[in-house]
Amino acid sequence: MEELEFRIRRLTRKDIDAAQSLAQNVWGDQAKRDTGMNIAYPKRLRRMFEGYLHADPRGSFLATIEGKAIGASYGHKWGRVGWIGPIEVSTEYQKHGVGTLLAHATVDHLETVGCDTIGVETMGDSEGHVEFYRRIGFSVHSPTFFYEKRLESDPGLSGETILLPFTSYETILNRAKELSERISPGLDLSVEFWMSYVANLGRILVYQDPNDPEKLLGASVVYGRTMEGVDTHLLRLLIVDPDHDDQQRVANALLQDSEFLVRRMGGRRMFFSCPATATSVSLLAERGYRVIGNNVRMTRGAKYAERGEMQIISWAG
Ligand SMILES: CC(C)(COP(=O)(O)OP(=O)(O)OC[C@H]1O[C@@H](n2cnc3c(N)ncnc32)[C@H](O)[C@@H]1OP(=O)(O)O)[C@@H](O)C(=O)NCCC(=O)NCCS
Image (cartoon, rainbow, N blue to C red; front, side, top):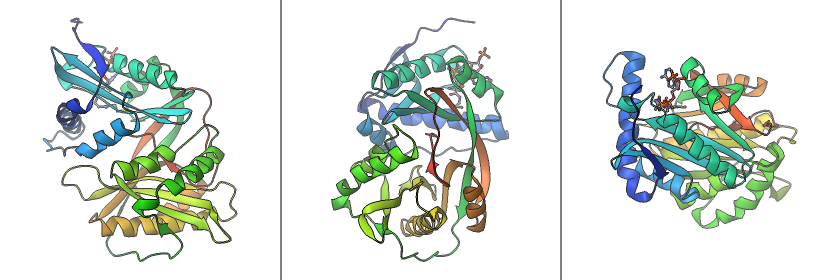
């Protein structure tokens, strides 16, 4: 194999244009390989990259050859849990070790900043992808599924959640941290809540305990568009108190109101990825979601498990 002279360095705001084009080309080529068709793959929005850098200015990496961007990877720290995604290498430079070094740089960074579990979600049906992460020390954890729903008509509001105003997002951070800790020790999702408002990525819905407004029974983060010209919106996360006695009700209300928000933001489909539980499978089928793909969650380091009947917490970038 021909030796390539590339270098890996931290990705900065100045690299966003190059990283955007790189992502568009890599995923366009991948879609062509998967379908045999030339697909005009949409551009990931600039604010997504800005959000990553906002949350962790040192967590993203770029591979270059003579200054030209040929690969990138993005690391995310959720307390003591970290994850990598996406990771992408220009088609013409794949299989020369660039992806491996990018992944190592990202893992090293996440370990240095205190993550003891590191996760990734990749194509479960691609032995090549699973093998790629296996060689970097990851092992298969569990399958996850991509769900999508076409939002034909206005679902109406459940009346059980509130849309958190921009001015008071700080009020949720400690409560989100405390709730994540109960879902998985060491997990801290407050950065996602913070990022969605500070980097203008999405909106937050809150389900409070009717008997104790200080107590959070659940919350969701609904992103606006993540790709140019695409009317499918991402439900970034949805979490429910794992000790509550009617978790299905909380999840259902958050889903319904997230769908409402997506429609109000101009979206016509909502999608997300999550593991399968008895509740998620039945609730999502009842609400008209269909499975459009599957991934596999892989981890390295400390054991990771989530408590609760339905948590939409995805490591897919
Ligand atoms: C996956 C990806 C990041 C790997 O980067 P890379 O620079 O090609 O990887 P490396 O050269 O370091 O490692 C190559 C090894 O990865 C595995 N691999 C990676 N992609 C593969 C593919 N599409 N088919 C088969 N094997 C693959 C193989 O084990 C390969 O080993 P080999 O060369 O002995 O066959 C790159 O192929 C890519 O950007 N793909 C498109 C986007 C993507 O799928 N990203 C990952 C999403 S989780």
